[in-house]
Structures are given as structure tokens and as C-alpha cells.
Amino acid sequence: MEAPNQFYDKSLPRGIRNNNPGNIRKSGDAWQGLADIQPDSAFFSFADPVYGIRALAKIIRNYRDRYGLHTVEGIINRWAPPVENNTGAYVNAVAAAVGVGPNQPLAFDAGQMRALVSSIIQHENGQQPYSAATIDDGIARAGWA
Image (cartoon, rainbow, N blue to C red; front, side):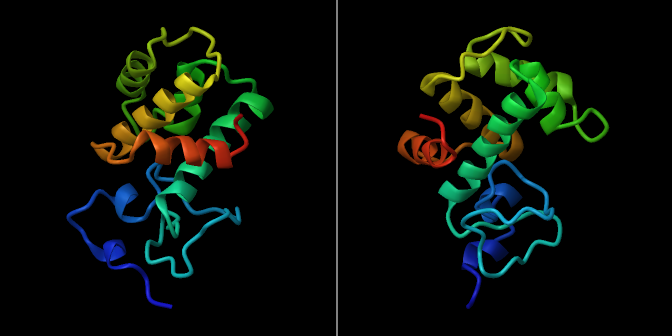
């Protein structure tokens, strides 16, 4: 099976190109919705953006449930470690978009999850091209009710 042409369109940000808007690095995880062809050696490629958004939302859920991370600062420090990122700026941008302080516990309700996922996508890619319906679909597929 041939990879979608967008996988090779270098004008698109890597995360958008790979339908992986959270820029999830390759690992041993067998994510639902992976593309048949994985043209990027470092980051997963998904068959559809909703699956990349699902994976992003699943990881946030794991951060909350397994690691007890309930704040934007806790989540982003794990998501984008300071070794590789300007984590302080990332935390501040996401917290502002979600409408909470960096260390304020999140409710993880539908509105906060949409804002959290959307702002991570924006920060990772310099754009957030997906509709609210697509974001909500990915979040729902990750098991958030």
C-alpha cells in the first residue's frame, strides 16, 4: 500500500504531515490507526489525524492515571522535557489556552480536554488545523467521556 502523498509534503509541519499532531515518537507501542507505511524514522504516522489525536489523548490519560499528573505543568514537563524544549514557554502557552494556571489541577472535562489537546497541537506544529469535531472524536476514541 502506498503512503498518502501528504507524508512526503515537506511544506507541512511534520506532525500534520504524519497525522501525528502530538509528534509522538516511535516506540514499542502498537497504536490503533497506525498507517501501513511508516515513512518517518523517528515519529509515528497515522492513517488519519483522528488516530493521532486519539493517541495524544490516551497519553494524557496515562499521565493522569499512572503518574498522577493533574496540572498543565506536570503534563507538559513529561510530554516535552526541558532537555529538548523550552518547556516553560510551552507550559505557559498551554495553560493560557486552557484558561488555568500552570499548577492549577485540571478537571479534565470535555472543554478542558479540547483546549488542552488543541493547544498541544498548536505548540507542536505552529498551527492547529483540525475542527472541534475531529478533536472531540479523537478524545472520545481515547476513552474520555
